[in-house]
Length: 460
Image (cartoon, rainbow, N blue to C red; front, side, top):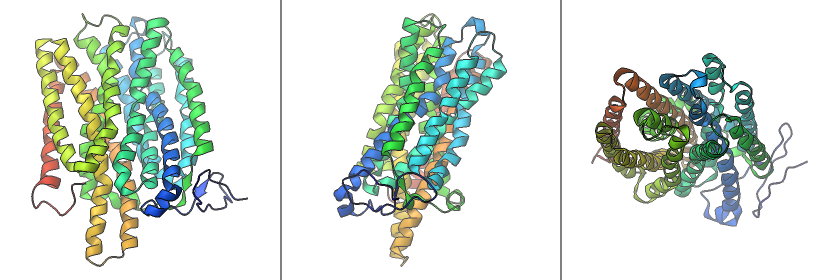
């Protein structure tokens, strides 16, 4: 029996002899007629349910950034231990992004989305079992680490959507997909704020009561409405080949600066406010009332970063974005020294906004770089079909590598805050480190992609 794909276009599907699910053999997004005949409809439907699953994945990944607000004196944890609790799931999620990006090509985008969504139930049930006063710190570390599975969803989702959309729309599609996923960070923070304001800090399990049904609905939606692309399958050497590309490591470094900042600040912001401005935020609810604003704005603006990159070039937007991030970090540093909360909040919100813009523009650079490489190869007489296939193969692999390495930036942010508070009692040393890193990023972007005569690669 042949599976059917619910679409207005007439698209061939293959018989699922060993696997269940909708498989599409003929997928040609670069063909305008194919796209207009219904390809866009299929891609949009998959994008919608990909965003839903990734959004919830981000929320589960971010669980411990809000759980730490509920861990009062009865848990016996100091601020340094709480920063570690938020760093651990970040690290696990970063590691999982590499196998998750391969999983789409091995099992199919739809099939893996269903499985990875259901896997989010595990950290929820574990947290429901152990989250109570008297639990050991080691147990909390282990359970927090399991929440890292939510971080892997980003890589598989982005790899999947990258295969569905034509190059001219990748910036917008990838930005929308990632931005919708990133919204999971402020979403779980808003849920926590609501619970803190109504039930109080002694009821963290109510957060899980909200998300467990949503996880089931996301998995069901993916099973019913998403598709697998046969053509999205890559050879087993794609990741190895991508690691030999200098651009892979350059993009990964830039993504540490953008996404690493977004996820790191998103996880740490509430704790930083409570430690650095104790008088202004005496209760967890006071901190939670502000922590969601930055991640919310950074998430909403990510598609704009992709759209700007589509129009003006990914490297150009990325360069100026890092200049803006360095400036925002400078504002935060001065405000911290002066203990000016309003200025501090302005600078930090700027960091969130520009990290969101940079997330979109940096990811747009990936397919643009390899598309340019393919064009150069064709000029030298290479086969067009082969060069296009290689460009897509490498783009998908680099998306996985950059996503994983970029997520490690979130670990570094939390560890930088932890060490700064331990050594000096404030976060000023961490802010100086952030400024220096952003300066390195905008210098590298200019030198490698914008400097006259630096290369024939397009701005992307």
